[in-house]
Image (tube, rainbow, N blue to C red; front, side):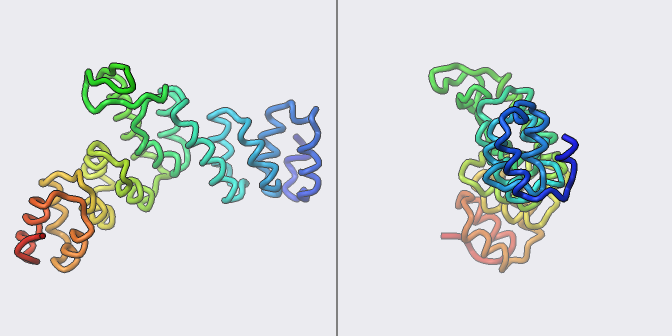
Length: 239
């Protein structure tokens, strides 16, 4: 551990250390090796696959870890989201990287890998779910939206994904921070789930030519598109 605290260690020394089976039996040594700025990627990423959920989160947030390794560790963590417990999901939504928080915005399944139904009492994968797990997923989503590492770009990417449902679109459209961003409003107008009230509110602040361009690539229902265009005076209606 004293050796691994040295920031000037060359990659050759770190690679040799990764072959020391006795040293790597200690999890602190393993984490310090994976998070060292000079550890080769072909060493740090396989090591990270052996970490527990919160170990992955902590390593990915360390400033010493190279950016490409952080992305790889985030990908490992995201691939495990279906297997973590409800409490872990909530903690990750609050404290993990922005990429993990964005993945939780889109993750509409329970911790046991079973798809949650949209309403209380529906059956999914042969199991009946109640409002309790659905309420928890809503809490995870709301917590992820408050994650300080979540960025505008990640929010836009999330709401425009095919997996984005009405719950996420509504949550972003009502959020006191994200709903005020112009680019996010434009992205929400391209989704299929934005309510008429929100669409009209956001459309009023967008110049008619730009609104018409946005709606050309929008998945909103035709009736909402037509009303937006009439209100803006841009066109008589969408085809």
